[in-house]
Image 1 (cartoon, rainbow, N blue to C red):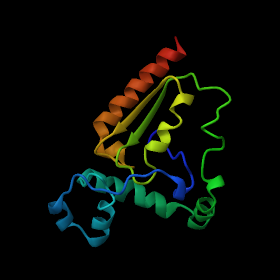
Image 2: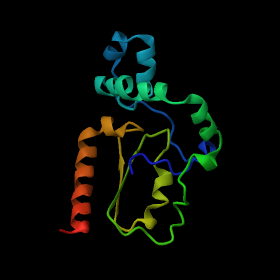
Image 3: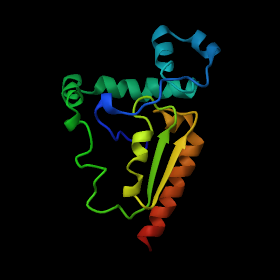
Image 4: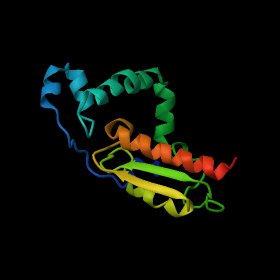
Length: 159
């Protein structure tokens, strides 16, 4: 799970305040106002974060059915997991990775810690200097953690 949404009700999430830890005033000064506004959402202001927002995130949001998504978001019972992650019938025995951003003000990290006992083979990592875009803000660490998890999955699955 990467930056998992555990508590679907926005008002009940345990979130850190929004923060930018790595500012890039020179980059911001080169940008159009819309681009600068996007980058202000990042924990790490970088060309790579901006590129990801412009080429991946914004087009995905624009391609979505806004009316349909608003219906889902308006009711937390339709916006979360289809099961209670805090009450699995039995703990999930397979290798698991739960990777959260320490500065993720969208879904946080504390709520994810509350489910870790349901995953006895879980590696739980909270990456500093990263928010909801941790796959870009901490790309090297993220790739290493995913590769390690994939190794454990192969080992678990056997030959």
